[in-house]
Length: 518
Ligand code: KIV
Ligand code: ZN
Image 1 (cartoon, rainbow, N blue to C red):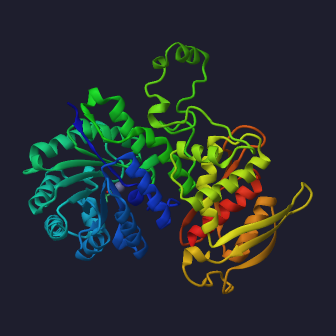
Image 2: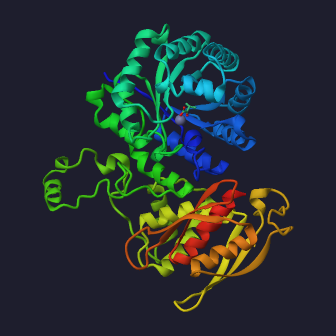
Image 3: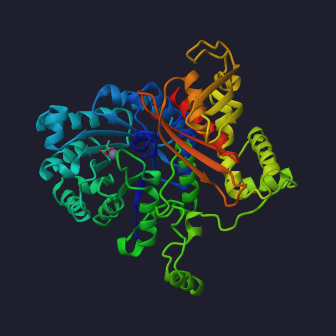
């Protein structure tokens, strides 16, 4: 019987804290629900002491998630631990996750603490966390560059103080797979009390080895792997959930390990995250990239037609890649539409369904065949557009190769009443004291630049860091998806917009990003 490995997903903490990946509380909740559907074992929902917003988001996730443990991160400080507990207290299965660096480099240069101080502080923090919560995880930051014996002493102290999980973090993605498995083995052999707790591994991807390291850790006996959807995270990211889980599933016999994740929800969950943070993964990204199951070479196509196993080690169905595209048109009724929405795995309430149905009808007027991918895009887009502080009403563009681009934008500005629950507040620079319409005009280097400048003239100075346009489906009438990343000196924000008109998609994406910055 293979060992069952716990999957801790930290998309909402380690992933979310990386530039351009921030999410609004409602978006975090959506991702948390997808993770629960995936059946990860633990959702790390955030770092409550880092900001009141993060604390509220953790509390919101905690209140909704029933089938997974929910963890919150804290430094070895009583105030952090209390803030995390305060956010977690209503969780069905709360976990307090305390961490402290154990490498000489981090202790000397960053913490300015001696080994003795780190040892005591780790034990004190775990002991304090145990006052509130029976499930406490201790993570050694930069464990893979730490003195092995000192690491073991810190783990022993944490275990003696009540930690149920100790985590080996490869914080800077430095370890080679064989080094990580050797370290896991060393910890098992040299740490008192280790047999009674779970050993976790937390790989980062700086050398592109995060998944290999997660699996190497598991093969050496680790009982928990820490991952993020699409591998998002600091710098080059974390071990990706989809790769680690499919590695476990596909090589279960070799690893003698498996996990409880429902792999058929992987693709949809990854798509949801991508649409929320405006991420476009590379086409050759394993499992979820556009080309991950595409066979181009004649020999390969021939082989796959004869028997898929010749060139496919994973079936697209096993990760939930839709195999058929159902096509709806302008004569399709609400019933058929509702069935398609359900078959795509979305649960919408009456109001949401009506909003998306209206958007579908508008799209069907412009586009002969509306596919599953189009409908998925509309669902992901609809709520977001209606919620933002700045919303596009209409636009007129004038452009040509001998003139400057000109954009005239009409925006609705103000918090939608349903969202704010109160009278709208003046967030815009020039004190718009209620929801109002504003017309903006700007010139630019082409129509998109002009439109973005028009938004900046009201919302503030944002610099465009990246911009891309993709067709969601094939054909000249395809829905276009624009992704932007902007910066304003306080942070980077990503936005996504969808329309059959690429300028409209671009303006929506820009407004989506600006709205996130508020
Ligand atoms: O990478 C890291 O060290 C972390 C810890 C907080 C576990 O994310
Ligand atoms: Zn990390």
